[in-house]
Image (cartoon, rainbow, N blue to C red; front, side, top):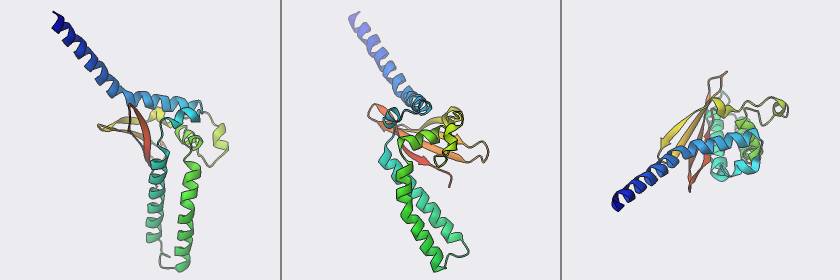
Length: 173
């Protein structure tokens, strides 16, 4: 009798842990949405790995700029190359300035971080209409589709201890 109680307790505990592990990214996503709507940068910081996120965004922007340069008619023009090189120098500083708690709050709320007027608009939390699900055992993918352009932005979360954190955002550039 005693061993059957232990089996039931063990199975119940294992089931509870499995449910928690499955549901945890959904709970974190809800916390991220709440932090963005409340404009609570301190709460949002718990769910973002800023250094990998900044590095990924810098690489994406630089790759996009290089591809654009390669396809322009003036690709062989030394002034075009100089201008592109100058632009690449500023990417790191711009990304560092934009990928902050307040910048992410604006992006999550569907605002343009470059526009002060956008902050006055009603909340349009882009995560409310997002599609999301597991992309692997330790990876969770949130897909946000722009209703006008149909461009997709992919927000990637990964396990961070017993929680989850945003580590990458794949932008349509």
